[in-house]
Amino acid sequence: MTLLEVRGLSKAFAIRAGGFTRHWARVVDDVSFSLNAGETLGLVGESGCGKTTLARCILRIAEPTAGEIVFDGTDLVKLSRGALRARRSELAIVYQNPYLSLSPRLSVHDLVAEPLVTHTPLRGAALTARVIELLQAVGLSADDLRKRARQLSGGQAQRVAIARALALRPKLIVLDEPTSALDVSVQAQVLNLLVKLQRDYGLTYLFISHNLDVVQHMADRILVMYLGRVAESGPSAAVFSMPRHPYTLALLAATPEPDPTRPAPDIALEGNVPSPLGPPTGCRFHPRCSWAQDRCKAETPALRSMRAGHLSACHFAEALPGG
Ligand code: SF4
Image (cartoon, rainbow, N blue to C red):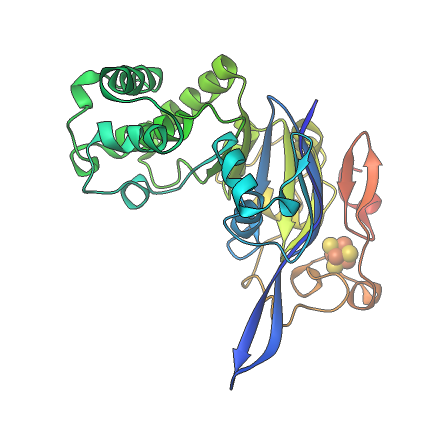
């Protein structure tokens, strides 16, 4: 069953000078995808590709400029502020750095209790019992109730952030680089916890990461973004075994331990993602693409179906290595 369907979502920021809007930066540009209940969609791309802005629009932390966000049958874009507040508990987010996302003034008890106090009638002993239940679900205990975030290890603090996200029994959790600020030694523990919680609570995840090895471990489906647009999407197994976009190939080639069974062209990502203020003409990836031809500078490639839900926005997708 589809839980989330995003259609034609765009987000542009006005660049003002001298009191007038001089330019529009289209950070997310006509993005569409769907996510089934109980699944994980991995959202990948370099910094500046629009991943986090897309997630913020879905959570309505940022206002989309155009498009629809149909969540469990309701277009969130059309909801009034009051109606949106009533649905807020169904969506949650876990940020990259728990020490920045958790208030240093609050105890673990108060951090986890805060959404419960705001959205439910739970108080007193019943509230504390629910907080302890949530802490136990993420591998912590009642012994941690009085601690502050700074007294916890990075892994423990991120578990508190996850318990807080779970508090209102959300249907969808956005995980924004949830392990990239943690020691390598605890990353796998937190990822395994997220997999267990998804199984136990039937959660749906939008998993943002620049680490393709982590995404491969977590995601059922992949969405690769480049400069605000979808470059490639599809089932995780298909995208990782036979990538159909040069950008995906370059990201995979840049992983610390590339899979020897998938195509390994000699391709390196050089330079940075261009500014969305003046994106390249035609295919936005053409200044960095080893396969670029004249057509790529003039003609924007459509997102085309390769096979069974595997889409690519490259004019020459069929001719890439491994095809
Ligand atoms: Fe490269 Fe052209 Fe494909 Fe864009 S359309 S990814 S520039 S080959």
